Image (cartoon, rainbow, N blue to C red; front, top):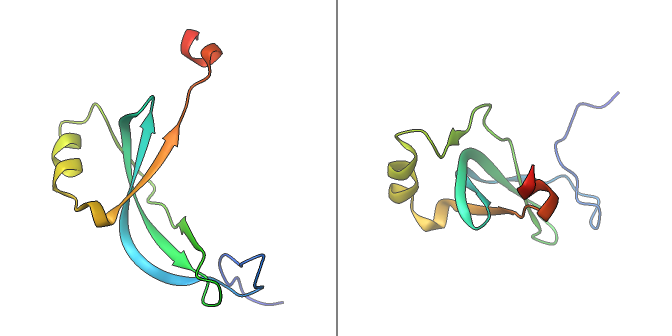
Length: 93
């Protein structure tokens, strides 16, 4: 039995490799920052496709007093946006 290699590129059949550790995933809800989570970017060595994985166990939520400071002081080059759009049914719930 082989050990776990991590994410595998469906196109190239190659395991992704760590590319950039310590990025900040900025989750948006209705175009407003909602939570911040540390993660890593892995990259396919053949085609260059990237995927975000290795998420931290805890996120920093928008109500936390440190939220605005962390968001403002993190360089844009380390931010990975993630957009969530609520349906009308979710907005009413």
